[in-house]
Length: 306
Length: 148
Image 1 (cartoon, rainbow over the protein chains, first blue to last red):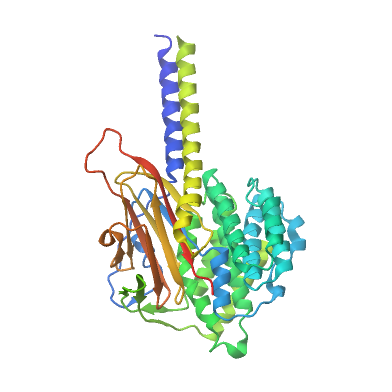
Image 2 (cartoon, each protein chain N blue to C red):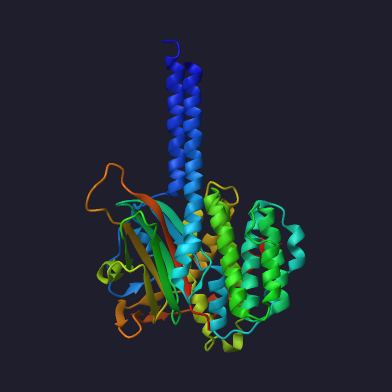
């Protein structure tokens, strides 16, 4: 009889711990419900996100550093190392927030350098990213073998890209699986902001109307809502709240850009077994809003690197 | 008696924690070794999306895809799971692609005329013959693109 209250207490504690682990291992995030829009010509804002369901697991996927760099390159942009974060700054980053943000930033700079065959910079940025990953306790995401492999293949872009992709996968899978999704999301946001910063800096005023990169910058409006959901899901980390405030300021500028799309029609090419999603999009970015956007992005990015 | 009870609880808890971490580690290995290989000549973007799901459970993913890029999406489940169904939807819940119409293929190659934010809905189907313990395993989602 004497043992009963104690047993009950142990039972309750065990159930609570098991419950907490179950939720963690399933990676369950906050589940939200909202009404779906019903327009044929849709103004793209967060319309897909307004239909978030109650699934067991919800992923908010931002463009990876490699994808951001590839989008800049495919728009025909030039390479300019002046817009990248200096590798001399690594010693300044000592908090988890700073190391996570700059792991993302350096990985984006690494991706950008590798796409433009900047071999010496590739090695320097990989070393800087390694220091950030090591500081965060991410075991073996980037090890000496990675650096050696990189040095042996400096002239093979495809292998270098593969190494960059693999090291980023190692870092974010380690963080996700070691119950550090907030740090993983900070890394992703750092990389996304760096990509957007480089893109905005590379647009010259004279070529605003004809620069393909402007279209890619407008496209980033589509990821702002996803990024905010990702951060809101991790708001229990003290560094995330101020980042959400900054991102809401960025969203306010992006909200001045209107993007409308016609209905998406899938067409299957039987020969290549590829689907082409056909639609037409119209946007209305003015140069004034572009300048405002560039200034806001630079302000946020500088708060990450300084 | 009390000591035996506490020891049993402690060992059960340790076993659960160990199993949970073990499952996660297996999921990571599965994503990197099995699912990434499905991307073939497409460059993996480096992002990691994987979770342990059980028969009948759903996952959703929200992502922006860009015009002019050639993408491959790979959705893989461990061998003990029934087929994984996936659908791509737009903002108006129109289904743009369903692998159910393509024999539950675990890859989909696509490109877009205009950049769009899309929603991916994944469902672990159920075995026809229900068992006492529903099957549970790792489901991984990977994206690859072509490099110019």
